[in-house]
Image 1 (cartoon, one colour):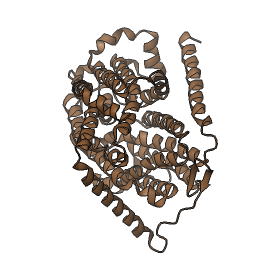
Image 2 (spheres, rainbow, N blue to C red):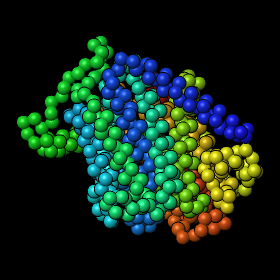
Image 3 (tube, rainbow, N blue to C red):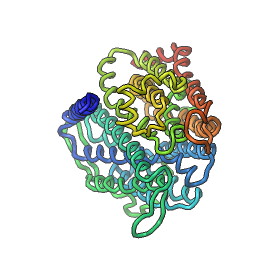
Image 4 (tube, helix red, strand yellow):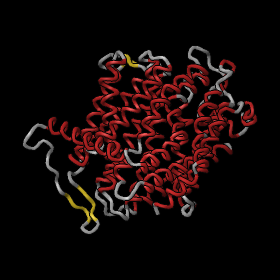
Length: 511
């Protein structure tokens, strides 16, 4: 056995032990919580596995299967992101009316419906009506409920542990989904797909990935059905079960549900009208708006990176693993470590240095790949090309090293700023108005998605156009994709310096 094999297997064992320890450290503090919390964690891993694989596939599916151009596909995905965000604002609070189990069931049925029909849709109109729209609704109604469930199933003392384990499992689920995306492409080809047995229908590879999401959701549904209605972890009485009334008792289920959504939408818009007149709210939104620029890099990972990678590196290139596996895997181990080592450092400081590291990391991908060529004939080159990404000899390019370096450095920065941004957002919301401010904190993200989708499509269409053979020689300006993305990302740390007093005053006044 070669030395590299010992390094690989030894490293894998160490990481596995570390992962088990991290999960065990969180889980041991949740002793006494209702078993529903573990069912909730299971649904998070499975749903994020399906969501991760499908989300990376969407931009490719829209162009390869639905015939949309790069710009049209990017614009569609930007609009889809806006739709999901809007639905979260409107239907998220439905949980308060019908309970956690019923809300999760409704979301699960909606996701199953969309993921079984969408692969068979012949055009974008039917794909939107029967696929994208109900899937957006399912994601919007399910996402917030998982967080509500953890809060209900834990005490004040154990809530942090519950959310910590939740965040860890979410990243594991995403890594599994990205690996599934690459594995399916490896088995069925980039677009070829396969003919389904029994029914004899030919589906493309991306359609098969969406269909796999349906089967992953089935265990989700079973886990939700095993939950009890009205379960709550109380501070003084432990686990309490108070069965909730059936929505629609004395009436029609659909009418009652629609009424709930109407009331929620009315309350949301009333809330908006109330806070929109407050100067403090616009300062709050401005501060969060300045952080959006570095966060938009994630959107480019989902919508720009797949096409960029496949066109330059060639069909079958494991673009899901380069970002979708490496990033969440690193986050699982880095976040607890960084949190433990930086407890006494202010959120502003962590956000500045973290966003600076992440923003500058984007420019690594714009460095001429030849600068990384020295790694080709080293143990690291063998690890990347042969042991991890299975790159054919004729397609081995040092661009892989620059992209990996970009992701690694970006993720290190993310481990600094991402948890602190969530903390900062909750921290600076005015006392007594936390719910109103936090529910509207998505507005900068909402607006930015309208912009980033078309930009993503324009970038790949301009600098990595379709129809050229793979290879850097055919894409001489490919680095401009990351120069432009990085130019936007760096606005965040610059803004944190320019408006330093606003951020520091807001943080200090909230203590």
